[in-house]
Length: 415
Image 1 (cartoon, rainbow, N blue to C red):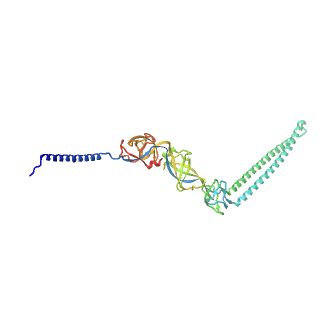
Image 2 (cartoon, helix red, strand yellow):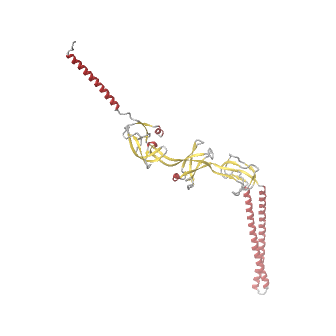
């Protein structure tokens, strides 16, 4: 056997040691690289943000009501009679004072003629009484003159004329004077009778005027009860069973009666402008608060509030439903953020928001809250215009955490 030289063995050992060292070094470098990759920080999460902006903010209350005519009345006849003529039908638009129907009452013409005859008779009585006054005054003048002359002669020549004759003349003078007073009284009575008969004639003429049924206001005929020839009873009391002629509605101006809840009553005031939406027409109309009951219903805890809506083209039909947006509170030019961006505190006047700083880091801030609506919250302090606030879930976010902000569609739609 040939034994290798010792030098050769030593060289081989050196080569093996160097190879082992290289392999060990390479393995260590790979392990260190893997550990470094494992300990590297994860990517920053993306969060939805909205920008704090300056806007006009208002809080409203939507109430539903039914349109009613501003005025509506069943027109009755004041006197009983037959319908001689009816000039309108359902849907006709009429003006104030327009004749809608005419009644026929034959006996009323006789009553008017009788009243006129009574006036003529009383005027004749006045003329006769005036003649009687003049006759009585003439008789009194003669009797008084006779008494005066006899009295003067008796004073100048006592005993010439018997006292009995003077007394008779005096008596005739007094009787004639009384007759003048009686004639004047008869004249006054005859004149008063003329006034009475004239008043009766005027009453009949007034009743005759009631045979023409006129429109008390401009409106629309919504119902017709009678036809030509119908017998109409006089509608002189609410307990009568008299049949109306037509029903008239004033639709150019409509009213809405809103049940305003107790919490919103302090914000209601006369002249308040409201927005009235009519879903059937898919249109909105301006309205105004014109009157309210100023009293809460004990059953519903609401106050009846009436809103008037002009309807000159009659596009709105009474009976349609409308949604009225009552503005309860408003702010102009205030800083607002979306509602999901704020965690409201227990006192509802403070809260907390997650702000994304210019370095894209989370910062938790306390804020003071003002007016709130269904989509926006007023921020009184703690933010400034342009700040980015997180509107998504904030449960996993911490102060100082790096994030990637992304403007949401919610924020874009509010611009």
